[in-house]
Image (cartoon, rainbow, N blue to C red):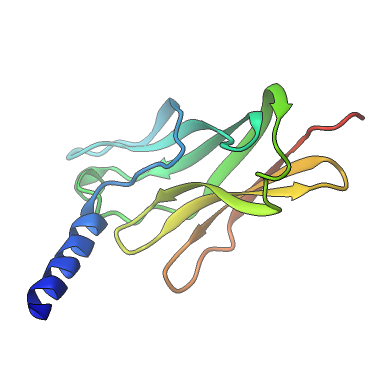
Length: 158
């Protein structure tokens, strides 16, 4: 009995690891540009996506990242680069409940490889200057990358 449950749970982990990368909190694919032609499979590209901050109405973030093509990229086995860029802007009236906005929380996550690599966007709240700061970076199971990008949106009166 234990053996079959253990085998089933390991099989589920393997299947989930082989699924293509998924965006959480994805709202819109804005566009892409080809960076390298691949004879077999999709081309290498830079993708641009938009997502709205889930807890702060009126702020949209735009993130760009590379997408590896070819056969390994087509089946989800390529390890994507750790570089990404983020730019968040006020796109409407900024409305939020201070009780719902933590000092720091992950608001976006995307799997970037089969082996537990993720790209994340973290929102930090600087209450003193009435500013939301957004940081993007990559993590791995053991260690991450120091490559990062940052942007900020002020919501108070100047």
